[in-house]
Length: 364
Image (cartoon, rainbow, N blue to C red; front, side):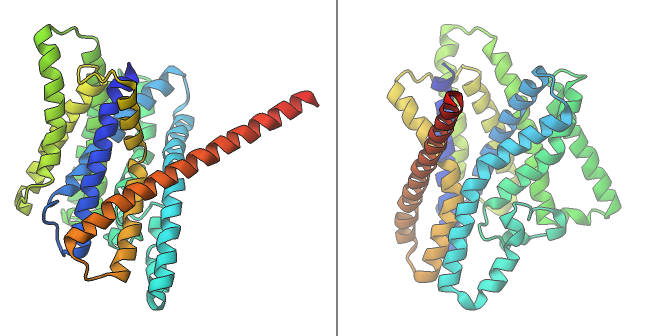
């Protein structure tokens, strides 16, 4: 049953990845987003989803009676292990493109991109270096990992004394106190740092996603009448679609904060309904597998589309915007799919080799 309901999230992981791709295509070739004017709002979805799974990990580790240091290590190790293989391949591809197409400036570009290679360019003392990153969208991954570095031990320590639903609320309170202290110390100038803003965005939205985990558990325990069983799945899809629609509407920058807040609210209730087993129930195995597959390639799409954009920017800088979209969208999906097949093949090969070694050891 879990797989049936969770594939709704996987489908929207794919859709929100497409939104980000469209946004970056226009930033590259139109000096500003047009049709995908607010595609960056998709990041809110990914932060909340990361927070949801973070809360799930906290509960699992607490149930296993694992210490906060070891538990924090396991959480960060799992995230890094899931991200870095794709990340490294994308970085290598961008470096090769730069060396082939812009050798004169390659040294400067690569040196500036060194922090991003280790997903640490969001630290505040490297302010605005996300613009130097070889893969600009990495700022989301960097902000998530930096936030988890501090959130994980705090959350695991608090969980030993408190119920899980209190943890995200306390983390938001800690964030508020931290903001006040930083503001007073720097005379509020630190809020002009783009990196600082992004890190705070990650912490706060992941905490909201953590609370969605506990709200989903509450919804799972509740029985609903026939009208609710019809209304809630409709509401779930509507809540997912509102941020997607907002991503296409040309909204003035003054309203971006409001749009971000609305996106956070919509995604919070949407994923709560999905994981609370109150949303759309997909019973066809083939559909579930297809949606799950789309979600599985979303990270590769997120990291590989800048590779294609970098290449296209060098070989065809004056490309028409609509042609750029027609090239980048399918090329990104195909590249992500090929990477997924290669990754699966390598994992199966390693698994087979380990099984053979185990069998050999038993015989000997």
